[in-house]
Length: 133
Image (cartoon, rainbow, N blue to C red):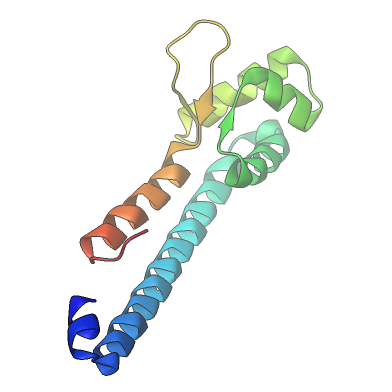
C-alpha cells in the first residue's frame, strides 16, 4: 500500500487486490468442501442411530446455523420432551457431533465443535496468507 501511495503504482494495487480476491475465493471453496465432507460423514453416522436418526438429522441441520444448544433448546427445536432431548444429545456426544462446554451438571451447553473448527482453521489459514479478516 505504501508503494502505491508513494510511487502511484496502481498496477501493484490491482495485483494485490486481485490476489486477495483469489485467496478469499479459494479459502471459501475449501471451507465449503470441508463442510460437505463433514455433512457426508455425519449423515452416515446418524443413520446408525436407529429411531433417533430423524431427530438427529433435524437437529444437525439446525446446528449448521446455530452451533450451540442446550437440552431445553433441543426440546423446543424438535418438539420433544426432556428425556428424549437428553438422550439425543447423549447420542450425538457419543458420535462426536456435540461437545459439552460448560462443565456444569445443570444448564449445560453443547457445541457443534467440529463445524466451528472448520471456520477457526479457515481464519488461521487466511491470517497466515497475509489477508486481514
